[in-house]
Image 1 (spheres, rainbow, N blue to C red):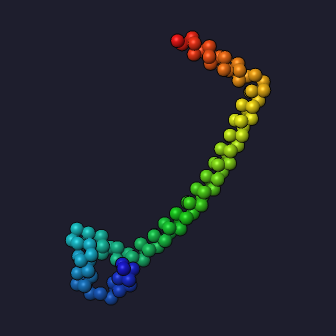
Image 2: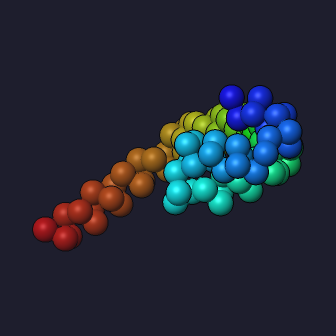
Image 3: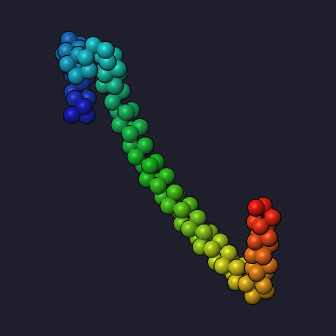
Length: 107
């Protein structure tokens, strides 16, 4: 609706503009509305850039999250390998004994 009005805005008289502005925005936001209508083309440009930037940011975020998911999978695999090696070497049993002894000494 404002886009259509902006195309006709320059052809209106000052009195018509004032009347429309007061009807739409009221007296408190009258100046804001008048500036918006005067700079409508710029407002559309900014809105377009914002929407395009949002798409770009979403794509970048998707790439980062994809990379993060790969890193998490690699971390899980490395952790499982570490636990497997610790179990084979008996280090888990030693760690378990040490924790048990520590817990008993605190009681």
